[in-house]
Image (cartoon, rainbow, N blue to C red; front, side):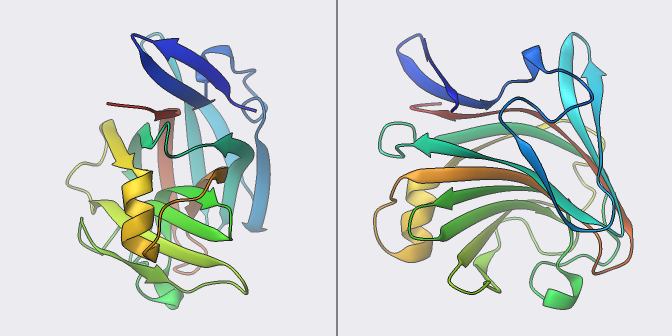
Length: 204
């Protein structure tokens, strides 16, 4: 379960807390899932902060965990990420090039998923369904595109409740899982990214 804390009347569910991370293992409560190739997961340091380092060489893997989040109470998803190598030719709009240096996926009850991606080619602001697995529906939002913001930390915030209703046409049910993912197996290239803390919050 994620930690629930109250900060200045803001409710926050911290799902990636790297302050107490035992480096060399996945962050507490998380597990590694491998779709293809060999996962490369490490730590990094930015001043006093610890961050998560992911590198994919023709691979696809993720860190994921179960959560129980009410999007009516904490609809704002916040995170920090940095991309230092984009998968050349990656574009989520085609299954043959569906590689991203960084993704944050939010799983809802009813087998609905939102994925927030840093894409190589698709423009920032693009949004559309992606090819779905059996009984699983995935809708993608492009938060960052290309190398314009590469090699520096970018802070993101999304109202997942509003995004869910935009994608699926009805109010968001409970959130059951979250995943951080990188992949470059379709393009046969290399990708690299870094993540800071991830949290669900009541307000910005």
